[in-house]
Image (tube, rainbow, N blue to C red):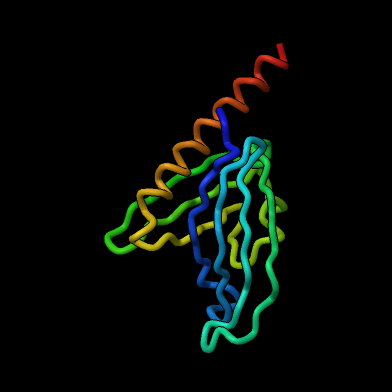
Length: 132
């Protein structure tokens, strides 16, 4: 599968530092995993920004990738294989990273999650072939 023209989908993590900050960024699917590029800013004015951070979550560290539809927005839910997987991403729960997707980007996010699920399945099949 050619991922060189890989699209990105905007996301938000709103519950950073008990809601005092939020992270906004872009999610991309790469051949080796999911890339999150984001910036953390204060929730009130948006004045204090952290600078852009890029984190690659390899497929080997992902247990599951889901997309939950909502009325007004959607959520991409990444479940890791350990608590360390999302340690560099703010606002994450125990081995789970939830990315809020605006309504206007829901279709693109669903397509991206579908692509990521397929690549995760391929990764697992390749791992099983290698173990035999």
